[in-house]
Structures are given as structure tokens and as C-alpha cells.
Amino acid sequence: MPESEPHPESETQRGRPTHPLSAADAWQFTASRAAETTLFFDFDGVLSPVTDDPDASQPVPSVLGVLEELAGAVGRVAIVSARPVSFLRSRFESLTHVDLYGLYGLEVWHGGAVVTEPAALPWVPAMAELAERAKAELPEQILVEYKRLSVALHYRTAPQLAQTVERWGHEQAERVGLRIQGGRMVVELKPPVDQDKGMVIGEGVLDARCAWYFGDDMSDIKAFDALRAREAVDPDFFGMCVAVANPETGAEVSSAADLTLESPEAVAGFLADALHAFRR
Ligand SMILES: O=P(O)(O)OC[C@H]1O[C@H](O[C@H]2O[C@H](CO)[C@@H](O)[C@H](O)[C@H]2O)[C@H](O)[C@@H](O)[C@@H]1O
Image (cartoon, rainbow, N blue to C red):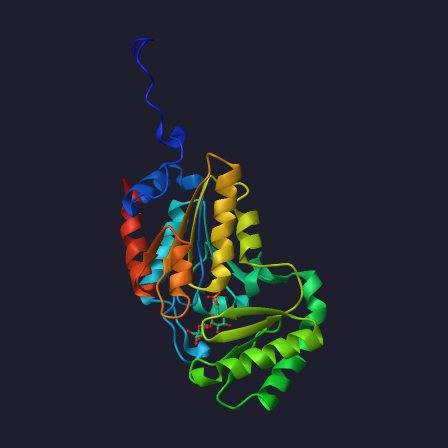
């Protein structure tokens, strides 16, 4: 090529595109830096349709194969959930190349074992006691989900009890010294340990040049914020925030996202389509 003609930039050198951009363009750009890309997924309401009984939740069947294929196409795929790692393992046992973060990052699946944030461990007895107290004191329609280092109080099947649950949760948080996390028809009590999805993502993208986060709930907005924060300090980094629509937190999450998908089933289809960008 003559000296005077500009050299075409290679795909990996191409600067970050400007938001907003179409999903197709975002995937195409992502594919150009696939090895330096991480895809993060929330579980409930994103990979799994909402059910009245949290124990009954299952991923959309087709998403398992798609995640495994994506894990072979990009640098890293991770699920970042408020569920314990043991629960995530029971749903994603077949996925050998997908990283798992549980309890908002208090747990990580690493080297074949669950690694727990040491600062949270002293709170195990208090959380067990709290779960028993919740069962005894709250109306029986409230489903109490004990998660070792957190207790979730579900009112999905009794929405008229939302205020009762909120009030009881705040009283207990003050009494025991816990933190509260609101979610979709749920109030969750957690140890006073600095760890949330934003911190998991902030740390997780330190070596990445591109990341996507798929979420549907209030705690996921912190993960979106972490991608925005990284973009703000690194002009080369490209982040995409994808919301999943729902009647409870959907409007707020969607307003913080680059694009919104209709349902967990739509997420599975969206990811299956995205695979084409990596096969070219
Ligand atoms: O971070 P996530 O993986 O999205 O976990 C958030 C909460 O998800 C679960 O509750 C939600 O899904 C349930 C099953 O579909 C539903 O019944 C409930 O109303 C939702 O809030 C989970 O049970 C909670 O522990 C998580 O905090």
C-alpha cells in the first residue's frame, strides 16, 4: 500500500462505538475483541422465568447450550446471582466453562469449591436465627428463603403483605445490624459486608476491554453502573447493559440499560442469534 494511503484499522484496534447502537452492531464490535470480552448474567428473571416458588426456578432449557457455546467464543462468561453457589451449581452443573458468583459475590465457585468472603462467615448463625424468627413471626403466606448468608422474605403470592414484610425487615435489620436489599416481590436481609454486584463487575472487568451485563432487578443496576464507570475512565472499554422487562422493576432497570429484552426466553433467543457474530 502506498505510504500516502491510510492503513485500515484492524478490527481489534477499532475504537469503541458510541451508544446508542443496534444490537447487531454491538455484537459485531464485541466479536472483534472476543478474547477480551466478559459476558455477565443475572439468574432469576434473566436466564430463568419467574415462578411463585423460588425452589422451582429453572433456566430456559435452550440457554444452557448457548452459554456453553458463548463461553468458548469469548474470554469469559459468568453468572452473578443473589442465589447461593450451591443453587446455581444445581441448575448449571453441565456448564464447565461458566464462572459462578453467588450471594451477590459473597460466594464464588473456584477450583471445584465454594469460596466464601471471610468477613461474612461470622454472620451465619445470625442469619439462621433470623430465618427461624421470620417463619415464626411473619404471616404464613410469606415464603422465607434461608440462604446461609442471607434471608429472603417473599411476598409474590401475597402482595397485600408487602408493607408488613418491609416493616418487619427494617426492624430486624436495625436490631441485628444487617443490610436490606429490595427486589421483585422480595425483601432480603444480608450481612453488613461491603459486597454487591457492582463490586463483582467492577473487579471482573479490570482486565477486559468489553463486557455485557444482563439483569432485571434493582441489584443489577449497580452492575450496570460498574460498566458505565469503567467506560468513563477507559475510553477503549465497551460496555453493554441489557435489561429484561418485567412488571415490577422493569421500568427502572430498563431506563438504566442500553436495550431491553422481553423475557428470559427472549434472552436465550438473543444470545443464540449473537453466536452468528462469533462464527464469521
Ligand atoms: O440475583 P438473582 O439471581 O436475580 O436473584 C434475585 C432473587 O431471585 C429469586 O427471587 C426472585 O425469583 C423468584 C423465582 O422466580 C420469585 O419467586 C421471586 O419473587 C423473585 O424475587 C430468589 O429467590 C431470591 O433469593 C433472589 O434474591
